[in-house]
Amino acid sequence: MSAQEARSAQEARSAERASTAGSTRTSPTSEVLARALELTPAEPQRFDVAFTATTQPCPWPKAYGGDMVAQAAAAAMLTVTDGKAMHSMHSYFMRPVDIGAPVTYEVEVLRDGRGYATRQVRAFQNGKPAYTCLASFAAGEEGGRYAAAAPTDVPAPESLPSSAAYLADVAPGSGTTMTDASKEYWSAGRSFDMRHVPGPVYVEVDGGRVAQQAVWIRPFDALRPVDGLTDAQRDLAALAYVCDYTILEPVLRVLGVPWAQPGLVTASLDHAMWFHRAPGPGVLDGWLLYAQEALAAGAGRGVGLGRFFTPDGEHLATVVQEGMIRTSSGGS
Image (cartoon, rainbow, N blue to C red; front, side, top):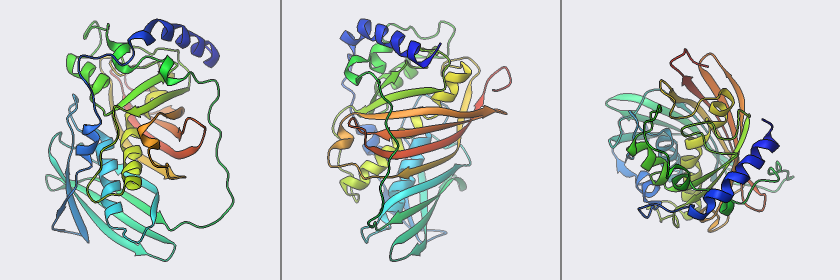
């Protein structure tokens, strides 16, 4: 199926489902993100500055990787106090992290220059390193400007079903690993409303085995203030948080593997993110388009690329992630 055919099929399905979009038996909020970004100062044991934070509930064996990316970003930003903004971070996930348990983030101040600053953040749990990242900050200066173009002909988010609406009539089980808990989590537990083009990959690859997809994302309600962070810093941390949920989906899509396929095991391995332009005030409270594509798959791993755009086409950030994709048949 071509991308155009997949888009047409999605639009036909949307007409049927859009009337129930967003309807759930609960009122989801963005509080999970706010709790994830609550950092508490701690006594450093190894490096210069330390904080603790808690991973948030999810129905998987181990914590969501975006918790660590966002918490590390927040920890790094809290140590840069001269107005420089984070423009990139590069991460490695070394060990799974327990859910609902504290993680200690130790920040090493590597450099504070006039134009740039560099931080290294290491996350520890149970006495072992679980995650590490390098983050770079820039004062900003005048220069030439160019931005990648946003994809065209993407249906408006209001015409698409929310995850809750899409999954409303899908029963747990039925040859998949979806449970009541994972259905609720996908529907309302991730702080953000997510609407897929050409279709989700929760229980089936809806829209065909193509290498591209897009996800409209918007917090369920206005993002809450975070102690110690400016709203602009919170918004960057929010992008770092939400980007990990779906970045491997174009790889799963092209392989024909839905999230709920029995025997599937995935894990984030490494992650890079560049923040090109700071979102304006309130931009993160509205819809963003997360355009994604699969770059490579093989040897039990896959690489996904994602770009965040505002509805008017401004390119805010770029993400590249490699993840483990292991299936019961021996991987990809």
